[in-house]
Amino acid sequence: METKPLIYGIIGFLLGGFIVSTVAVTIEKPRNNGMMSMASTLEGKSGDEFDKAFLSGMIVHHQDAVDMANLAKAHAKHDEIKKLADDIIAAQSNEIDMMQAWQADWGYKSAPANHNSH
Image 1 (cartoon, rainbow, N blue to C red):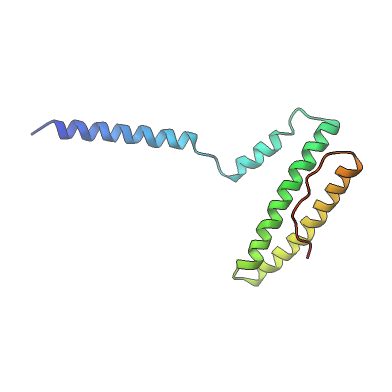
Image 2: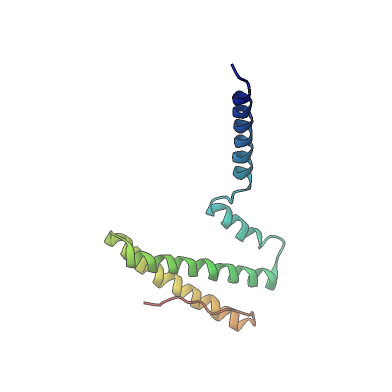
């Protein structure tokens, strides 16, 4: 029995295991960790610094919800999803408007959102 194929097989197996474990460690975590990092940007902040960061992050978060809801309205099969999408668009758009008004009232810099108030 020739040992070269066996050695190459073992090396391939070990190398494959190393690659898989490396990718598993470095791959981005699910969205839940994205939310954790969003919250972690608030750690150590207080007062105006906290309020600015909170509003900025929440406006982006709400805009993402509006964008997803618009996609649901266009592509969802079930009417229940489309109705939920309408409710999300209305509620989140109103909250975006409110938070942007607070930013303006309090002298915080704000970027306009692209929400569609329906």
